[in-house]
Length: 117
Image 1 (tube, rainbow, N blue to C red):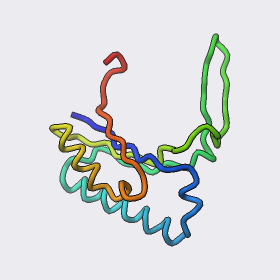
Image 2: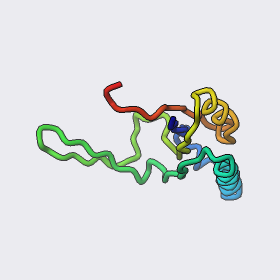
Image 3: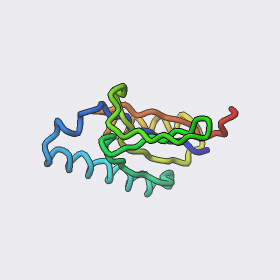
C-alpha cells in the first residue's frame, strides 16, 4: 500500500535558519531518504521550493485564474514529501515518527486512494 509523508513546515521557518542550518537539515533529510531506499520502502522523495515561488491555478466557469504566492492565509506549507510503499499504515506511521523533520515540522501521513473514497 502507498503512503505519502507530507512535510508540513511553518511559514517563515526557512527564513529563520542560517544557511549552514538549512544545509544541515536538508542533508539530514537526504540521508533519511537514502536509508528508506535501502529498506526498500521509498518510492520517491523531493523537497519543494517555498510558497514564495508558488502559483495556484483555478478554473471556474471556464475562466482560468492564477494566484501568485505567498499566500497570506496559509500558516504552513508543504516543504517536501516521501512516497512510501508499506504493508500497513502502522509501518508508515513508524517511519513518519523516525523522520528528522518531525522534530521541527509536522509530518502528515496520507494513504494514496481514489478521490471517491
